[in-house]
Length: 297
Image (cartoon, rainbow, N blue to C red; front, side):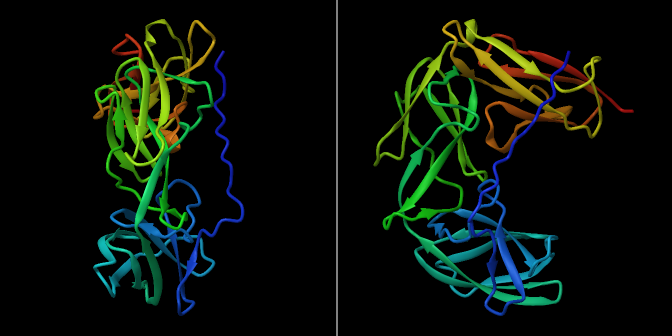
């Protein structure tokens, strides 16, 4: 019998998620950093930020016609794509971002501050005492702080320092406010910014882990093109510890597999083309742990 997959999202309260323009016509929100990223947090120097613009109180994002910073040494508009705007922070300071969107105009004062430290935390859906299967690629949340102790927003950090040096590999610092790390070998692995205190992660050999994947699809394990079911991954070792692994697609032209909001447990499969959607469980010995058929119908 299949279990249903329930995703609980904790809504942030008391968090400033929109910035009102100086003319009161438009409001700005960040779309990076996960749900409800606070616009009160300055952007870290050297980092990227993704932005949408709305009319005051509206739900739908507006198509951005043009955007310009008054000081590109502090802030640059690095890209416009319909309703999305990409910003690149330069040096510390305040820049005014002028925006035209569907006949409305406004300006926003964006603060950039220098990064003093980066700390790495508990993997999403993980808990204290969890261990990681060697071979797993997981999103590790991180907190970026200024010299004054304020939290900074943005993404595109340099990869963390890793000890022992060959025990893991930093892959990318993503827009979800976390860094993707492949944990390569068993042992105690430390991540740090090279300045502050390191965070330690216990990695074990995944050969003796009992894995369970609730695929959330039909008993015939088939999908239609365009379907996006969720999968719930869990693992337990011989000592009864919760083990974190990761899922990935073997052929991304047939289907893709993405950790939902950086979770180590919940994955979304996207069926793209007819064929065999083979899914690898990174950290296990099975190259193709799970296979689903994607049909054109």
